[in-house]
Image (cartoon, rainbow, N blue to C red):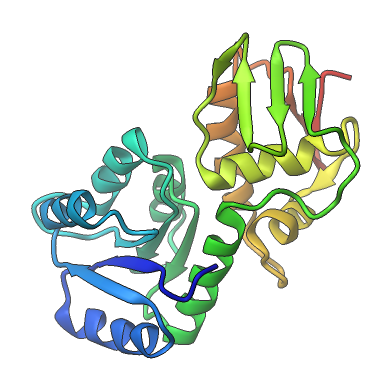
Length: 232
């Protein structure tokens, strides 16, 4: 991850932006700011940041709508800021396409650690080697060298976290990985993490690679344990 990565920080509170911007710039990041949803979309188009930190509660256009619009055209990593550890807020943000979330009040060092982790994994494949560079699983193809996924010959646009999740699961077809294992492998959370990150990402991934996400062929749930990759 280059130290010159550009971060788009979106929050309607100037005091929050100041508190979070100073340590990031001190540590080598370039930070551009936006105070509302419309400005966020404008700044994103002008500056092409490497990552977006996005508050949910914003004037003009809320963070969830901004996230959806960004995700419709870009795979840029997105970290949501939520006012509280509320299931509805968190799940809504993840389902909108966010890669991770941080609960306010935000500790700058915690946010920076999450930013570094998301940037680190956004262009990387799984740590375990072994599978061939190009794999075929039914009508799904996975090119690990190029980080390209295809379905019936057509490219599938995956966000970085969705791609990382697929790469980790497909590296060992048939093996069940728990949510905690996936949190460590994909999100690099080395503590007792939040399984909502995994479940929401699985939902988004299934919507893109499965013919019927309600009856998944590739990303299969093993009730009470976690997920495995098929077809077996």
